[in-house]
Length: 421
Image (cartoon, rainbow, N blue to C red; front, side):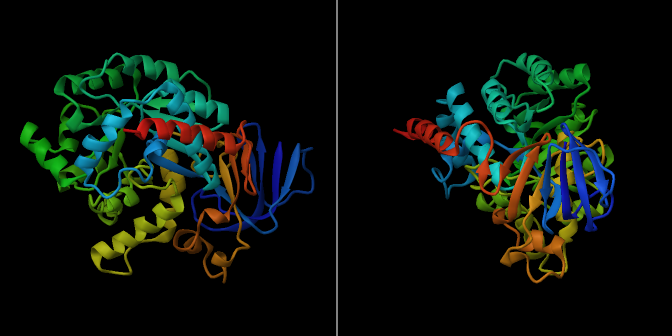
């Protein structure tokens, strides 16, 4: 058992109020949240927060973690050229060892930024899962089927990765409508029917994606997925930038999740998702970074800032947006999209949490700590990151097995080999 005491607590259990108190963990779950108690059990460790803030960890609700190998390699190109001319050819060279080493590099970045889990869509999933397990890190895998794949792996992956223990889980999905076929969509309908699982895909990221889908099928991607019955068990979409009113109605009625990726969408000039309108319709919202090739950082502080300021710019109204709701998207929202019991600090919830160092220049003066986190927070404020009740990062030191220098070295070897002519 671990006790965090003498600190500020942002539980996100209902309100976004910050209170004085402490948090106890027992195994991989939270056992107590509240004021200090005179009578308490014997703890394995007691951590004096010294006035710092403890809160649920950030959840990166859309990522391609192993794409660290093309960080800053193919920048400043439009999405379709970037994807088909630069990224796909290099990804064809990936080996399981590459994905293992490159994923561990991403995990270090996640931990240093207070991100306790990621919803990842990528290849060589066994290697990806093993890297996560070896680091003690929580990952939700999203299916990434395309038209040319062996579709039967959808069934086997769902069974395999949902039986690997509490740190690994799997949700069915396809890469996108434009890399799918109607036969694949029919298969996915059967898969979610057999498993009772939700469905996710890249959705309406660019205007051309939507226009070409309408040209092929007479429907937007959202409407096409709905026609095939893919949202019967819930789920959602990544990006969702260019949505029609009918698309938004489907998301609202079905209780689907929109995972907003403002950094990637801005860098690729894809557009700004209508988050303010989505909020008015009660659509569930989460935040993701997308991959480190299109962002290029795996940094939720930056995503929160962009999520809110781009809405202000879009509406040309500085009053648009609520910092507290953006913070909730980054923490609780991601847990909801990923199906994790880690949306708040409460007894029985997963002990996936972060300690924020408030004794830093960017946190002063103290007027509104929640707004400070969104508008001026950074990774330098992350003092400690816990996943499944285990401290994996504390005061600049990682506890993931290998030393970070070794992880950096191996990742560089993979990147050099994959990107050479």
